[in-house]
Image (cartoon, rainbow, N blue to C red; front, side, top):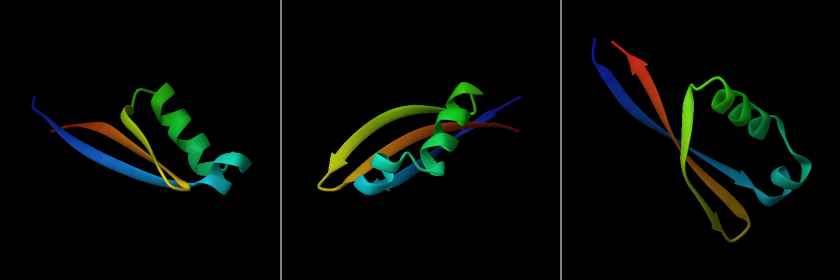
Length: 58
């Protein structure tokens, strides 16, 4: 069985981070289920950029 690694990038506004929106909850749940792994987090002005690695089995 082979694995293909895919990367996902989320850009979340500062306001969304302050409000703890559903996108942050979704990322948290996916990490807890081991669907994705956060590999990088950066702050760019008023946005948070979250880069994740996702594994899919073929």
